Image (cartoon, rainbow over all chains, first blue to last red; front, side, top):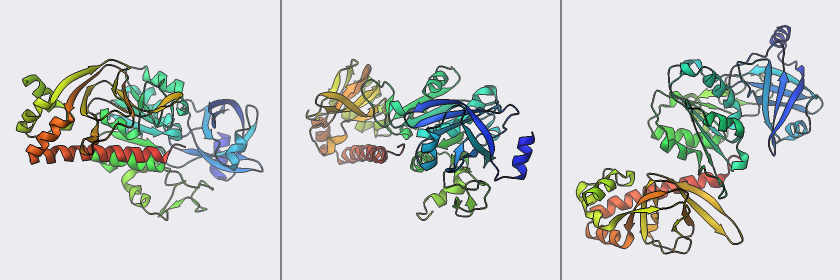
Length: 278
Length: 149
């Protein structure tokens, strides 16, 4: 509680946390777990700023289960200066953490409706809390469908967890990859192909996360199937620095992705996705 | 024949086609079945058949000498294989059934004859093939972008 109070009054001050567990997910992707005995409350879709002293700070989505706030989980791809250094760290190393920041997936509003989760690549990480929350409160929702696209079978994130979700009778999980060898028995193609075999209703709640191009294609295909834009939610990525809407690095038209996003209702953000300068 | 007409009418590719056109096509079509591992078409084969897949999964694979083929797309129920009907050419990819595949095989030469005899049928089939070709091109472009990298 003291920690949360401190974070509320000083939003720029990171709290030191020790990496309790580090798991290699893919060649360049790893997942860290921080033990937070007093709990780290967050809403699915929110992110934290992770800081390595002397190197820099990066925004990373929270990918843990909101029902277990004593375990703060982040899945990170080593892609830039800071995350490549992070890739060399492991259990016992100390990080600066501040957050949580940003908007959340409207999971409570989706109660009583069918839920369609569409993820691409590392986009499954910010959606994992949604899936865990929905599956943890399964009776509150209608049909639950998870569609996931990745580059190759070797690039499927949370593969064991995907297989375990797929083994349940109350959730449908479909995966597709861009290319594969003959030992892959799943589908091959783009993620929008999976929509062909899924019943879609205008009242569904749709949560989409992945590369921006993929999200645009997905939204286009959903609209072809009469899905209203207001029912589609996407998570945006921009260069976020302060996390509280002051520095302006992540400005997207009249909004700041760190504060007003990263989760947006599609109809509110779509016009800006077509503006080249943004 | 009635049964074949009913099956043709039920395939999404021919959805909303005029009933007399479906009847007209019956003579060009037959039901076919492929066991897992069989090839519907191999790279280099003349594309003389349009397959309307009813059941099962087909891998579209790029064969590579000396190494494993790369699967670039899978097709399933409702899909069409052999869309080069409009510009006949040799297949450039292998099409392998990954499980038992049930399909309608339409003889291309017969279909083209009927499309010429009845331009309205020709237009309807051409539009459907163009739509499928455009969809596949869009998907190929998105795949080419390699957005998950």
